[in-house]
Image 1 (cartoon, rainbow, N blue to C red):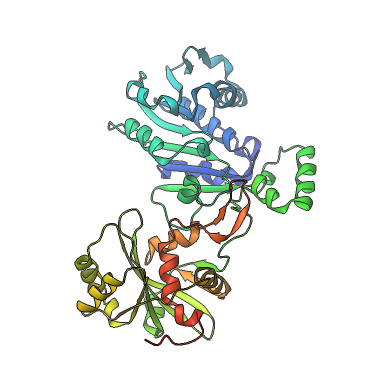
Image 2: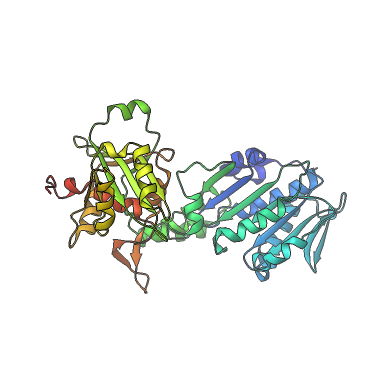
Length: 411
Protein backbone atom coordinates (compact mmCIF):
# COMPACT_ATOMS: atom_id res chain seq x y z
CA UNK A 1 0.00 0.00 0.00
CA UNK A 2 1.79 3.11 -1.21
CA UNK A 3 -1.09 5.56 -1.53
CA UNK A 4 -0.47 8.49 0.74
CA UNK A 5 -3.09 9.54 3.30
CA UNK A 6 -2.56 13.31 3.27
CA UNK A 7 -4.49 14.03 6.43
CA UNK A 8 -2.31 11.63 8.42
CA UNK A 9 1.15 12.46 7.14
CA UNK A 10 1.28 15.82 5.35
CA UNK A 11 0.33 19.04 7.19
CA UNK A 12 -2.63 20.92 5.76
CA UNK A 13 -0.41 23.80 4.61
CA UNK A 14 1.20 21.47 2.04
CA UNK A 15 -1.91 19.77 0.67
CA UNK A 16 -2.41 22.13 -2.27
CA UNK A 17 1.21 22.05 -3.40
CA UNK A 18 1.27 18.24 -3.11
CA UNK A 19 -1.87 17.82 -5.21
CA UNK A 20 -0.85 20.35 -7.87
CA UNK A 21 2.87 19.62 -8.18
CA UNK A 22 2.57 17.82 -11.53
CA UNK A 23 1.05 20.95 -13.10
CA UNK A 24 4.34 22.84 -12.70
CA UNK A 25 7.93 22.36 -13.76
CA UNK A 26 9.22 24.12 -10.64
CA UNK A 27 7.81 23.59 -7.13
CA UNK A 28 9.14 25.83 -4.37
CA UNK A 29 8.63 25.37 -0.64
CA UNK A 30 9.97 28.24 1.45
CA UNK A 31 9.36 29.75 4.86
CA UNK A 32 10.24 29.40 8.52
CA UNK A 33 12.33 26.76 10.25
CA UNK A 34 10.96 23.30 11.02
CA UNK A 35 7.90 23.63 8.81
CA UNK A 36 8.29 20.19 7.23
CA UNK A 37 9.46 21.39 3.80
CA UNK A 38 12.28 18.86 3.49
CA UNK A 39 10.02 16.05 4.74
CA UNK A 40 7.43 16.87 2.09
CA UNK A 41 10.03 16.63 -0.67
CA UNK A 42 11.45 13.39 0.71
CA UNK A 43 7.97 11.90 0.57
CA UNK A 44 7.59 13.15 -2.98
CA UNK A 45 10.85 11.62 -4.24
CA UNK A 46 9.99 8.26 -2.70
CA UNK A 47 6.40 8.35 -3.94
CA UNK A 48 7.45 9.20 -7.50
CA UNK A 49 9.86 6.26 -7.65
CA UNK A 50 7.15 3.86 -6.58
CA UNK A 51 4.53 5.29 -8.95
CA UNK A 52 6.59 5.84 -12.12
CA UNK A 53 9.43 4.10 -13.87
CA UNK A 54 11.76 7.07 -13.44
CA UNK A 55 14.66 7.94 -11.18
CA UNK A 56 15.31 11.14 -9.22
CA UNK A 57 18.26 13.06 -7.83
CA UNK A 58 18.62 15.09 -4.62
CA UNK A 59 21.19 17.87 -4.29
CA UNK A 60 22.74 20.06 -1.67
CA UNK A 61 25.40 22.71 -2.11
CA UNK A 62 28.11 20.48 -0.64
CA UNK A 63 28.35 16.72 -1.12
CA UNK A 64 29.59 16.11 2.45
CA UNK A 65 26.27 17.38 3.88
CA UNK A 66 24.09 14.90 2.00
CA UNK A 67 24.30 11.88 4.29
CA UNK A 68 23.17 13.56 7.50
CA UNK A 69 20.37 15.54 5.85
CA UNK A 70 18.45 14.66 2.70
CA UNK A 71 19.70 11.03 2.60
CA UNK A 72 18.26 10.41 6.08
CA UNK A 73 15.10 12.35 5.18
CA UNK A 74 14.50 9.90 2.34
CA UNK A 75 14.72 6.91 4.67
CA UNK A 76 12.28 8.61 7.05
CA UNK A 77 9.86 8.91 4.12
CA UNK A 78 10.33 5.24 3.23
CA UNK A 79 9.43 4.32 6.80
CA UNK A 80 6.38 6.59 6.72
CA UNK A 81 5.13 4.57 3.75
CA UNK A 82 5.95 1.37 5.69
CA UNK A 83 7.83 -0.06 2.72
CA UNK A 84 11.36 -0.49 4.12
CA UNK A 85 11.45 -4.05 2.75
CA UNK A 86 11.06 -2.70 -0.80
CA UNK A 87 14.09 -0.42 -0.72
CA UNK A 88 17.83 -1.08 -0.85
CA UNK A 89 20.16 1.45 0.83
CA UNK A 90 23.57 2.14 -0.71
CA UNK A 91 26.26 4.44 0.65
CA UNK A 92 29.06 4.20 -1.93
CA UNK A 93 27.89 6.10 -3.84
CA UNK A 94 24.84 7.34 -1.92
CA UNK A 95 21.65 6.06 -3.46
CA UNK A 96 18.38 4.25 -2.77
CA UNK A 97 17.00 1.59 -5.10
CA UNK A 98 13.33 0.66 -5.29
CA UNK A 99 13.61 -3.11 -5.63
CA UNK A 100 10.36 -3.92 -7.50
CA UNK A 101 11.41 -1.83 -10.53
CA UNK A 102 15.03 -0.74 -10.02
CA UNK A 103 14.22 2.97 -10.05
CA UNK A 104 16.67 5.04 -7.98
CA UNK A 105 17.13 8.13 -5.88
CA UNK A 106 20.63 9.49 -6.48
CA UNK A 107 22.49 12.13 -4.45
CA UNK A 108 24.95 14.79 -5.57
CA UNK A 109 26.60 17.92 -4.26
CA UNK A 110 26.62 21.11 -6.33
CA UNK A 111 30.36 21.31 -5.65
CA UNK A 112 30.49 18.41 -8.11
CA UNK A 113 28.55 20.13 -10.88
CA UNK A 114 31.13 19.07 -13.46
CA UNK A 115 30.19 15.44 -12.77
CA UNK A 116 26.54 15.87 -13.70
CA UNK A 117 27.09 15.02 -17.33
CA UNK A 118 27.97 11.57 -16.11
CA UNK A 119 24.80 11.24 -14.03
CA UNK A 120 23.28 7.95 -15.15
CA UNK A 121 20.52 5.61 -14.10
CA UNK A 122 18.80 2.67 -15.75
CA UNK A 123 15.68 4.85 -15.87
CA UNK A 124 15.20 8.46 -17.01
CA UNK A 125 15.90 11.04 -14.30
CA UNK A 126 12.58 12.86 -14.18
CA UNK A 127 12.77 14.93 -11.01
CA UNK A 128 15.41 16.82 -9.07
CA UNK A 129 15.41 18.25 -5.55
CA UNK A 130 17.49 21.30 -4.63
CA UNK A 131 17.55 21.00 -0.85
CA UNK A 132 18.46 24.06 1.26
CA UNK A 133 18.44 26.25 -1.83
CA UNK A 134 19.82 29.31 -0.03
CA UNK A 135 23.17 27.51 0.35
CA UNK A 136 23.71 27.60 -3.42
CA UNK A 137 25.92 30.55 -4.37
CA UNK A 138 23.92 31.69 -7.38
CA UNK A 139 21.36 30.70 -9.95
CA UNK A 140 24.02 29.63 -12.46
CA UNK A 141 24.72 26.48 -10.44
CA UNK A 142 21.06 25.53 -10.64
CA UNK A 143 20.83 26.18 -14.34
CA UNK A 144 23.83 23.93 -15.03
CA UNK A 145 22.07 21.05 -13.30
CA UNK A 146 18.69 21.80 -14.88
CA UNK A 147 20.16 21.93 -18.38
CA UNK A 148 21.92 18.61 -17.81
CA UNK A 149 18.73 16.88 -16.70
CA UNK A 150 16.55 18.44 -19.40
CA UNK A 151 18.61 16.96 -22.20
CA UNK A 152 16.28 14.27 -23.54
CA UNK A 153 12.60 13.83 -24.29
CA UNK A 154 10.93 11.49 -21.80
CA UNK A 155 7.45 10.15 -21.30
CA UNK A 156 7.06 11.58 -17.80
CA UNK A 157 7.12 15.29 -16.95
CA UNK A 158 10.36 16.81 -15.67
CA UNK A 159 9.84 18.32 -12.23
CA UNK A 160 12.19 20.34 -10.02
CA UNK A 161 11.67 20.80 -6.28
CA UNK A 162 13.25 23.48 -4.10
CA UNK A 163 13.16 24.13 -0.36
CA UNK A 164 14.82 26.85 1.68
CA UNK A 165 14.58 29.24 4.59
CA UNK A 166 14.72 32.78 3.11
CA UNK A 167 18.00 34.56 3.93
CA UNK A 168 17.72 37.87 5.77
CA UNK A 169 18.83 40.08 2.91
CA UNK A 170 16.10 40.92 0.42
CA UNK A 171 18.60 41.09 -2.43
CA UNK A 172 19.88 37.54 -1.90
CA UNK A 173 19.51 35.77 -5.24
CA UNK A 174 16.89 33.24 -4.14
CA UNK A 175 14.83 35.93 -2.37
CA UNK A 176 14.92 38.00 -5.55
CA UNK A 177 13.82 35.01 -7.58
CA UNK A 178 11.08 33.54 -5.39
CA UNK A 179 10.11 36.16 -2.73
CA UNK A 180 8.48 38.31 -5.36
CA UNK A 181 5.19 39.60 -6.68
CA UNK A 182 6.45 38.91 -10.19
CA UNK A 183 4.56 36.09 -11.94
CA UNK A 184 6.95 33.20 -12.61
CA UNK A 185 5.93 30.84 -15.44
CA UNK A 186 5.60 27.11 -14.69
CA UNK A 187 6.32 27.71 -11.01
CA UNK A 188 4.33 26.91 -7.87
CA UNK A 189 5.47 28.69 -4.70
CA UNK A 190 4.22 27.77 -1.23
CA UNK A 191 5.23 29.73 1.87
CA UNK A 192 4.78 28.14 5.29
CA UNK A 193 5.65 29.10 8.85
CA UNK A 194 6.85 27.06 11.78
CA UNK A 195 3.32 27.15 13.15
CA UNK A 196 1.91 25.35 10.10
CA UNK A 197 3.61 22.18 11.33
CA UNK A 198 1.20 20.40 13.70
CA UNK A 199 4.03 18.16 14.92
CA UNK A 200 6.17 21.00 16.24
CA UNK A 201 7.22 20.53 19.86
CA UNK A 202 5.86 22.55 22.75
CA UNK A 203 9.40 23.67 23.57
CA UNK A 204 9.85 25.19 20.11
CA UNK A 205 6.60 27.09 20.56
CA UNK A 206 7.79 28.39 23.91
CA UNK A 207 11.11 29.54 22.42
CA UNK A 208 9.26 31.24 19.57
CA UNK A 209 7.05 33.17 21.97
CA UNK A 210 10.06 34.34 23.96
CA UNK A 211 11.81 35.55 20.80
CA UNK A 212 8.63 37.27 19.63
CA UNK A 213 8.68 39.38 22.77
CA UNK A 214 12.44 40.01 22.94
CA UNK A 215 13.43 40.29 19.26
CA UNK A 216 10.43 40.56 16.92
CA UNK A 217 12.57 40.85 13.79
CA UNK A 218 14.48 37.65 14.50
CA UNK A 219 11.14 36.00 15.28
CA UNK A 220 9.79 37.01 11.86
CA UNK A 221 12.89 35.72 10.11
CA UNK A 222 13.32 32.39 11.96
CA UNK A 223 9.72 31.31 12.49
CA UNK A 224 7.73 33.20 9.86
CA UNK A 225 10.38 32.89 7.17
CA UNK A 226 10.43 36.58 6.24
CA UNK A 227 13.39 38.24 4.53
CA UNK A 228 13.71 41.03 7.08
CA UNK A 229 16.73 42.73 5.48
CA UNK A 230 18.37 45.25 7.76
CA UNK A 231 15.29 45.24 9.94
CA UNK A 232 13.60 48.22 8.29
CA UNK A 233 11.68 48.00 5.03
CA UNK A 234 12.87 50.81 2.71
CA UNK A 235 9.47 51.19 1.03
CA UNK A 236 6.53 49.71 2.92
CA UNK A 237 4.04 51.57 0.72
CA UNK A 238 4.46 49.43 -2.40
CA UNK A 239 1.34 47.98 -3.98
CA UNK A 240 1.87 45.45 -6.75
CA UNK A 241 -1.21 45.05 -8.92
CA UNK A 242 -2.55 45.44 -12.43
CA UNK A 243 -2.90 49.04 -13.60
CA UNK A 244 -5.76 48.98 -16.10
CA UNK A 245 -5.97 50.79 -19.42
CA UNK A 246 -9.01 52.61 -18.04
CA UNK A 247 -6.91 54.01 -15.18
CA UNK A 248 -4.15 55.03 -17.59
CA UNK A 249 -6.67 57.11 -19.59
CA UNK A 250 -7.39 59.23 -16.50
CA UNK A 251 -3.74 59.99 -15.70
CA UNK A 252 -2.86 63.60 -16.44
CA UNK A 253 0.01 64.49 -14.09
CA UNK A 254 2.72 62.74 -16.06
CA UNK A 255 6.38 62.86 -15.06
CA UNK A 256 9.46 61.30 -16.67
CA UNK A 257 12.77 60.56 -14.94
CA UNK A 258 16.00 59.26 -16.47
CA UNK A 259 19.16 57.69 -15.06
CA UNK A 260 21.88 57.27 -17.68
CA UNK A 261 23.82 54.15 -16.72
CA UNK A 262 25.88 52.44 -19.43
CA UNK A 263 27.91 49.31 -18.83
CA UNK A 264 27.45 47.77 -15.36
CA UNK A 265 24.48 50.02 -14.49
CA UNK A 266 21.41 49.95 -16.70
CA UNK A 267 19.92 52.94 -18.50
CA UNK A 268 16.59 53.58 -16.74
CA UNK A 269 13.75 55.86 -17.81
CA UNK A 270 10.42 55.82 -15.99
CA UNK A 271 7.06 57.34 -16.88
CA UNK A 272 4.72 57.85 -13.95
CA UNK A 273 1.55 59.63 -12.87
CA UNK A 274 1.33 61.39 -9.53
CA UNK A 275 -2.07 61.72 -7.85
CA UNK A 276 -1.35 64.72 -5.62
CA UNK A 277 -4.75 64.56 -3.88
CA UNK A 278 -4.31 60.98 -2.71
CA UNK A 279 -0.49 61.07 -2.70
CA UNK A 280 -0.20 57.99 -4.91
CA UNK A 281 2.48 57.30 -7.53
CA UNK A 282 1.52 55.06 -10.46
CA UNK A 283 4.35 53.56 -12.52
CA UNK A 284 3.09 53.60 -16.11
CA UNK A 285 5.91 52.58 -18.44
CA UNK A 286 9.67 52.11 -18.56
CA UNK A 287 12.69 51.98 -20.84
CA UNK A 288 15.79 50.08 -19.77
CA UNK A 289 18.92 48.64 -21.31
CA UNK A 290 22.67 48.21 -21.07
CA UNK A 291 25.31 50.05 -23.11
CA UNK A 292 22.75 52.06 -25.05
CA UNK A 293 24.08 54.71 -27.41
CA UNK A 294 22.37 58.10 -27.45
CA UNK A 295 20.78 57.50 -30.85
CA UNK A 296 19.28 54.27 -29.46
CA UNK A 297 17.99 56.15 -26.41
CA UNK A 298 16.44 58.77 -28.69
CA UNK A 299 14.68 56.09 -30.73
CA UNK A 300 13.34 54.34 -27.64
CA UNK A 301 12.12 57.59 -26.08
CA UNK A 302 10.35 58.64 -29.26
CA UNK A 303 8.91 55.18 -29.89
CA UNK A 304 7.21 55.27 -26.50
CA UNK A 305 6.34 59.00 -26.89
CA UNK A 306 8.14 59.88 -23.67
CA UNK A 307 9.34 63.00 -25.49
CA UNK A 308 5.78 64.38 -25.32
CA UNK A 309 6.69 65.36 -21.75
CA UNK A 310 9.64 67.04 -20.10
CA UNK A 311 12.27 64.56 -18.95
CA UNK A 312 14.32 65.17 -15.81
CA UNK A 313 17.65 63.37 -16.08
CA UNK A 314 20.68 62.75 -13.92
CA UNK A 315 22.70 65.96 -14.30
CA UNK A 316 26.01 64.11 -13.92
CA UNK A 317 26.09 63.72 -17.74
CA UNK A 318 25.67 67.26 -19.18
CA UNK A 319 27.03 66.22 -22.58
CA UNK A 320 24.37 63.53 -22.90
CA UNK A 321 21.67 66.00 -21.87
CA UNK A 322 22.84 68.48 -24.50
CA UNK A 323 22.93 65.79 -27.17
CA UNK A 324 19.37 64.78 -26.32
CA UNK A 325 18.32 68.44 -26.60
CA UNK A 326 19.98 68.56 -30.01
CA UNK A 327 17.83 65.56 -30.94
CA UNK A 328 14.65 67.52 -30.09
CA UNK A 329 14.10 65.88 -26.69
CA UNK A 330 12.72 68.19 -23.98
CA UNK A 331 15.16 67.26 -21.24
CA UNK A 332 16.71 69.01 -18.24
CA UNK A 333 19.23 68.01 -15.60
CA UNK A 334 18.08 67.25 -12.08
CA UNK A 335 18.85 69.84 -9.40
CA UNK A 336 20.69 67.54 -7.08
CA UNK A 337 22.81 68.65 -4.15
CA UNK A 338 23.80 67.66 -0.60
CA UNK A 339 21.23 65.36 0.97
CA UNK A 340 19.12 65.11 -2.18
CA UNK A 341 19.33 61.32 -2.33
CA UNK A 342 18.19 60.82 1.27
CA UNK A 343 15.45 63.46 1.06
CA UNK A 344 14.20 61.99 -2.20
CA UNK A 345 14.03 58.49 -0.77
CA UNK A 346 12.23 59.77 2.33
CA UNK A 347 9.69 61.57 0.14
CA UNK A 348 9.02 58.41 -1.87
CA UNK A 349 8.57 56.44 1.33
CA UNK A 350 6.21 59.10 2.70
CA UNK A 351 3.67 58.71 -0.09
CA UNK A 352 0.52 56.76 0.65
CA UNK A 353 1.18 54.28 -2.16
CA UNK A 354 3.57 53.49 -4.97
CA UNK A 355 1.51 51.35 -7.34
CA UNK A 356 3.55 49.10 -9.63
CA UNK A 357 2.39 46.68 -12.31
CA UNK A 358 4.98 43.99 -13.07
CA UNK A 359 3.65 43.67 -16.62
CA UNK A 360 4.04 47.38 -17.40
CA UNK A 361 7.28 48.14 -15.55
CA UNK A 362 9.02 44.84 -14.75
CA UNK A 363 12.53 46.16 -14.05
CA UNK A 364 11.24 49.07 -11.97
CA UNK A 365 9.09 46.63 -9.99
CA UNK A 366 12.06 44.32 -9.39
CA UNK A 367 14.29 47.12 -8.10
CA UNK A 368 11.73 48.67 -5.76
CA UNK A 369 10.80 45.24 -4.40
CA UNK A 370 14.38 44.09 -3.78
CA UNK A 371 16.14 47.24 -2.61
CA UNK A 372 17.53 47.17 0.91
CA UNK A 373 19.58 49.38 3.19
CA UNK A 374 23.35 49.31 3.21
CA UNK A 375 25.06 47.49 6.06
CA UNK A 376 28.51 48.16 7.51
CA UNK A 377 31.29 45.63 8.07
CA UNK A 378 29.69 44.66 11.40
CA UNK A 379 26.32 43.98 9.83
CA UNK A 380 24.74 47.14 11.23
CA UNK A 381 22.13 48.87 9.07
CA UNK A 382 23.14 52.23 7.61
CA UNK A 383 20.63 55.05 6.91
CA UNK A 384 20.97 54.87 3.12
CA UNK A 385 19.82 52.54 0.39
CA UNK A 386 22.21 50.22 -1.38
CA UNK A 387 23.88 51.92 -4.33
CA UNK A 388 23.27 48.88 -6.49
CA UNK A 389 20.39 47.96 -8.77
CA UNK A 390 18.66 51.21 -7.81
CA UNK A 391 18.58 52.87 -11.23
CA UNK A 392 14.79 53.14 -11.38
CA UNK A 393 14.63 54.46 -7.84
CA UNK A 394 17.03 57.22 -8.87
CA UNK A 395 15.02 57.86 -12.05
CA UNK A 396 11.84 58.13 -9.97
CA UNK A 397 13.51 60.66 -7.68
CA UNK A 398 14.48 62.77 -10.69
CA UNK A 399 10.96 62.55 -12.14
CA UNK A 400 9.46 63.78 -8.86
CA UNK A 401 12.16 66.30 -8.01
CA UNK A 402 9.86 69.33 -8.22
CA UNK A 403 7.47 67.63 -5.79
CA UNK A 404 10.31 66.64 -3.47
CA UNK A 405 11.62 70.21 -3.43
CA UNK A 406 8.01 71.42 -3.12
CA UNK A 407 8.45 73.93 -5.89
CA UNK A 408 8.51 74.11 -9.66
CA UNK A 409 11.94 73.77 -11.18
CA UNK A 410 12.95 76.95 -12.99
CA UNK A 411 15.73 76.94 -15.58
